[in-house]
Image (cartoon, rainbow, N blue to C red; front, side):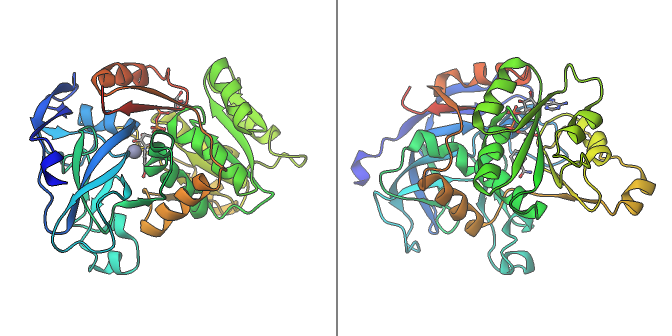
Length: 353
Ligand code: NAD
Ligand code: ZN
């Protein structure tokens, strides 16, 4: 098998803050003793990759770094300590490339909180390359025969929103508002929420995103670009009592929604912060938060079990979020569209072109 692995490969590399990202040939990495080498077939493009390109978070990034953290491919080589994965197995590359697996957070399966965690496409080279090394314990297990282009967005977007919905503690029959519902995370969030028996109020901008949200199963759409009062419109859409959604998933990479959500969430409801607009702050009135017993929390990707559960929803045919496939060489044009909020659903890169 090893002689089929080339020495060089195509990759999209972040070399300069703000971009453009470089599409170039680089050496194929060798897997470390606890890693598998994955021949990546498809990789989704997440808004986090744009934050990485812009270097706009208060989190140190490696430079240069190969971007990407939503890769799906085939194991082509493995380190000597790897058990439980074989050559030919289908796996996914996640944001959490590795964690120590022995700190207090890892021991409780809160691996994303590990202080020694390595992040794909950020602190270590990610999935925007044809061959990526990733920690075997953290590689997502993808069932044989899966459509690798369709499953790629599950590895960050799907996992993150599925975990966020669990963290919201919303129960079947309750309402969840999804802010940024027409984007990559949002379109998957609508589908997971529907599969979990929740009623969805979608919030995004423009007619095209509205139509996509309704098609995916949202019961109401609030257009933030035309709504006179987002608070009133969201509450009005939250069932016959109009008391607001039981949970809110904040996915938009914009600050404003982080200041609006406590205005419309139902008393005793939960606001889950997931989008990470650069430099933004959450703000809410103390009085309302207290007397309406509102919870505000963050949710950060998910652990290995969450990953397998999110993939399981996909495998059972419950998730059909829209995605478009373009070549790896076109990744910069995807970022250009993303900056202008023009993407409905996800773009997935075909690594062979
Ligand atoms: P995306 O660009 O695909 O989608 C964002 C959507 O938000 C777009 O459809 C846009 O139109 C919409 N939007 C913009 N302003 C809005 C507003 N004021 N109200 C409502 N909608 C608005 O981005 P994505 O890939 O879905 O990622 C979204 C965010 O989530 C990014 O900040 C990303 O870094 C973050 N993220 C967080 C985690 C985590 O673990 N917490 C994981 C993945 C991504
Ligand atoms: Zn992501």
